[in-house]
Length: 116
Figure 1 (spheres, helix red, strand yellow):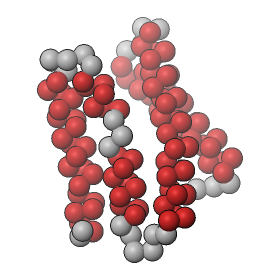
Figure 2 (cartoon, rainbow, N blue to C red):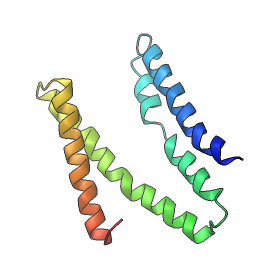
Figure 3 (tube, helix red, strand yellow):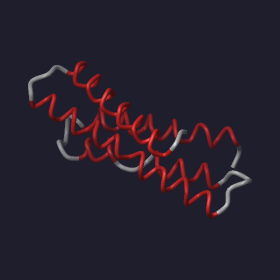
Figure 4 (cartoon, rainbow, N blue to C red):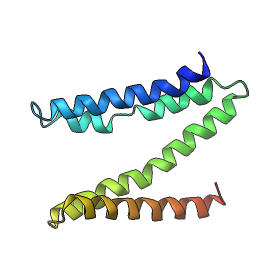
């Protein structure tokens, strides 16, 4: 696969999912959240890493481990957003609070691991 296609494929799939969420939100309360949270970028990232010339099984395993650890701040983002919305916050402050929590937790994880 060409390097250009490897770079464009995740973008194309992400745009398709965003469009599907925008359309399906009018017809379903279940499908849009499923589409929004389905693991699309994770397998694409693994695929991109695996297709590099210098990838070894050990380096691919390390990448999968980092993906698993780095999903934790995203879960915290969702929890903070949910709590803010429950508290009556509007969308923009909710998103900002979610990203602040995400960034802080990601920073802690980076410090614990000893850097990027």
